[in-house]
Image (tube, rainbow, N blue to C red; front, side, top):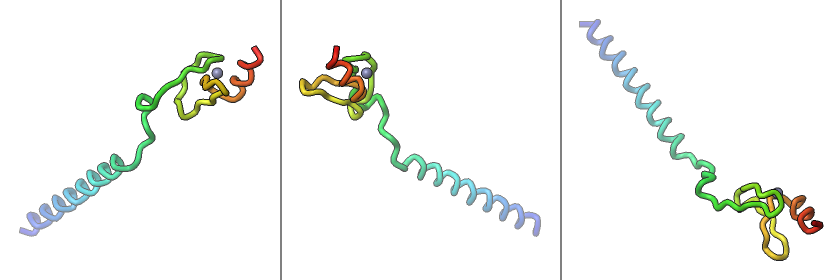
Length: 78
Ligand SMILES: [Zn+2]
């Protein structure tokens, strides 16, 4: 009868540990994730033609998009 009691305790402990692990997994999925690149608008640099997120864009006076201020300056020169 004691063996049955211990078996029950072990099963209960395993069940508690499993439920804690699954709840931890749920918490990690609820945590804020960085926005996916596919959801963000992509622009191409007028100078080097590379594609980059719109949030990183550098615009000149005519609203032409560049990947960096360096390329904006180089593009004006040419
Ligand atoms: Zn560029």
